[in-house]
Image 1: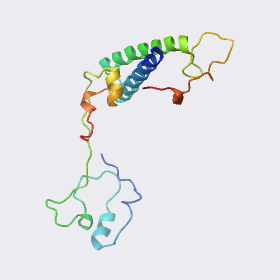
Image 2 (image 1 turned 90 degrees about the vertical axis):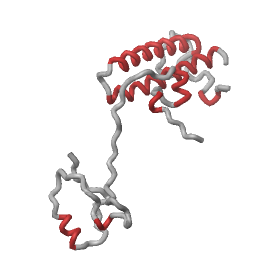
Image 3 (image 1 turned 60 degrees about the vertical axis):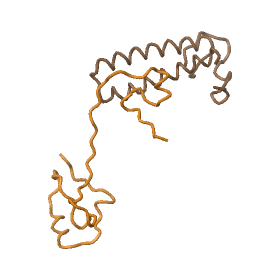
Image 4 (image 1 turned 30 degrees about the vertical axis):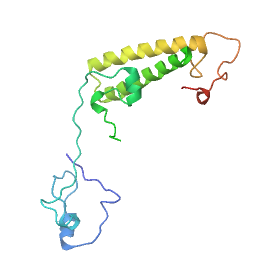
Length: 86
Length: 85
């Protein structure tokens, strides 16, 4: 599901430890969600911090704004209209 | 607001709705209600552009205009010369 791909920031090695060397031996390809390695966890956080996972709810088509209202608000979708409170 | 600005405003509104429906349909290409609304807006937009260009000249350089004996494209106003308010 998740393909391991090199990333200019996250693929660089910060400090090489015995633990990290073991990590490097993990084969490329599919990897499972897991807690961040102890070396990069924030201290004092419990439960263990995990890497972020973004998701978006599937949008269903419903009533839309009139053209004049849509141009004014920047979207035709009432469910996407969320102006900053200031 | 005079007639010309009112027509321009309506074209801008319809174009915006068409673009937002375009984005929705990119991820929901089978959505019949959105498709219906898109084609309704598209027809209104093309009709509004046709009526505007008939009176005031082309909105785009290839805009549909009846034959003229002069080059209408450089006739003003340019977008930045229009006083919207």
